[in-house]
Length: 228
Ligand code: OAD
Image (cartoon, rainbow, N blue to C red; front, side, top):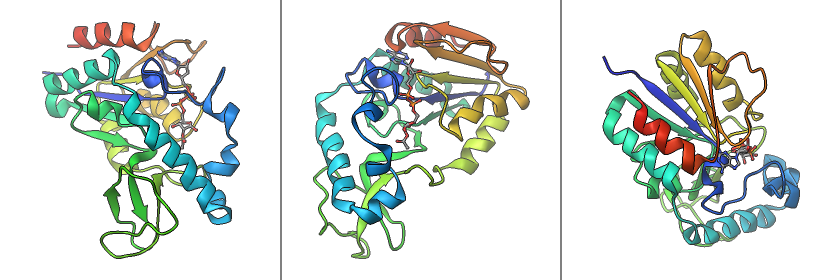
């Protein structure tokens, strides 16, 4: 019987597409304060600053193209069908542009806005201003981004998938932001094999069975093609 695979990606998978990761050398959080752009309090205090930050990121996205790692995961989805689930912490659209059909953006989606009244989500590719309104109910809106201190999206669906998978692989993530950082221990405790594909490898991580060190564009296609 075909194995059930759950994959979690982080900023490292988009690094070779030219997008900044968050931590480490020249990471996003070296240039911006989380407290200024990525908390509910920041949105209350200075909504224009927060909206401008995500407008800037959204505007830059079309310059970046999906890389071989995004494309390899899309092919894996095609091959494994409903035995495969892709979860990403990334808010970029490179998985979708790489061909992935079903992606759970647990930290939100740069290409969507959400209304603050009823939580309606809608596709948005332009520049959000203080006057942008929900097309469904006319309420004020915000970026569809999960800020620090907010609960990530799809958690029930993710927990079910982790509980029932045979293998869990995490790719290009520093594994420091919870709850995503806890997926490997949860999957392991439910019986899954845990594989890490990353530029830097975790040291003595009791939850990771297999470590594949290298750039995502080099290691992910090989690993994905060999997955049975
Ligand atoms: P990080 O920036 O914390 O980690 C990126 C990881 O990718 C690091 O472990 C790098 O070693 C690795 N890496 C870098 N280049 C790579 C490459 N070419 N191939 C493979 N791996 C590479 O990013 P995340 O773990 O995704 O949340 O960060 C998690 C969350 O923290 C983000 O979703 C974001 C951030 O604050 C929100 O904004 C809510």
